[in-house]
Length: 134
Ligand SMILES: [Zn+2]
Image 1 (cartoon, rainbow, N blue to C red):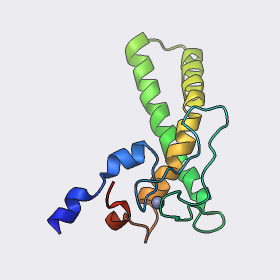
Image 2: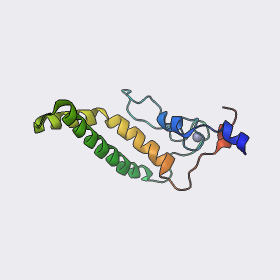
Image 3: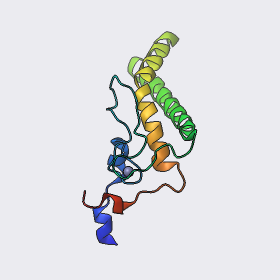
């Protein structure tokens, strides 16, 4: 059992690199985070063949995750802007917040689905046997 855990791939790198939640080897997305072709997903995991969209409308759930991301980013940005600039000009905040959240949109889009797949889907777990030998 212990030997098996040593061979298992770690969760965090799999999440950061947007890997399949089941085998942690196959890519979820077809292209890098900031690519011009946008956030296109593989339909099935290239390694283990898992279907990423588990049911029609499955990825609507990712909207709640990205909403939580955006709220956390806005709060952090507002506090950071206040600490760094000490300004109380509302336009400064609006420009910084909208600008940065706009830049982070591809990140939010991508990682909301990764988090949904890895953490928020009952019955979907990592299968270390699928990554054996990697
Ligand atoms: Zn897989």
